[in-house]
Image (cartoon, rainbow, N blue to C red; front, side):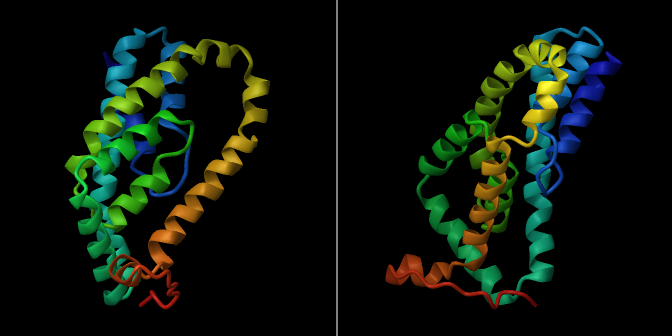
Length: 196
């Protein structure tokens, strides 16, 4: 039972950090293989920890960004979140699809938190999508454990680099696009004067 608690806490911690770190599935694979745990319990407990980590991250990111971003940009991000939340089915669908692809969810949740999108709208589709994608990864974990050298090489793969670049573009777009101008006047305008 202790190992399942460790899976939960470890998954929570890796998905609580606001920068790209190790994926939660890697923690699940480690514990599942190292201690020969029940794969379904590892998945349920790990994804629950991951979802709680992302939820907590969306609570503290707005407080953190409001300390470093000026009031105008903070109000603009809140406006963006309200506009996006108005499309009730689009945000959950985007989150669900995004969690199915092999991209880090940290940039997505950082953007969601900065835009102050309601967390309860995104956590259920995140949980379902994450469960599906992590199930695939954990099942492939035995193969991965047997091929450690290939995995270490894969950490610097084109997918990892693409994920990092995409995440930086997403966060930059949320921060530097003037969302009032784009959404109200339908014109793209960048604003780099956002810091306090």
